[in-house]
Image (cartoon, rainbow, N blue to C red; front, side, top):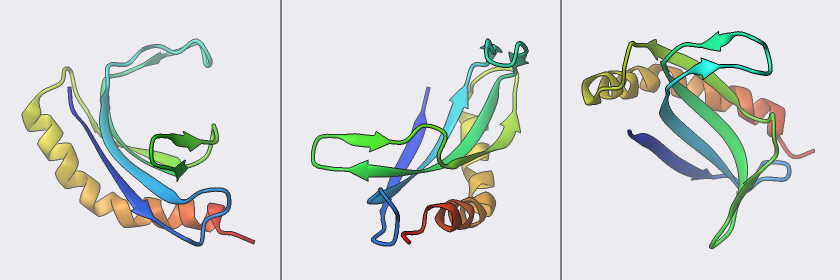
Length: 104
C-alpha cells in the first residue's frame, strides 16, 4: 500500500522546521480510544515536524487530517483518485496548521 509523503521547509514555525504533507490509506478496525470502529479510508494530513539529516520528530496531537475518500478496500485506482482530491484540500489544511504553529 502506498503513502505519498512530502516535506515543505518553513522558517516561520514554532518548534518545527518542516511541514509533512501525506496522503495515505488506513485499513480501519477497532478504535480502543473511542470504543467504536474506523472504516477503511484515504486521508490527507499536514503535521509540523522537526527534520534533521537522519531523524524526523513531531509532537503528538499537532497538525490536521481530513477524510478524502471512503472505500471497501485498497486499490491503486482509488489511491490515484484520493491524490487528485487532495489537491483541493491541500492549501486549506496547510493554512490551518500554519495558523496554529506560527512562531511567536
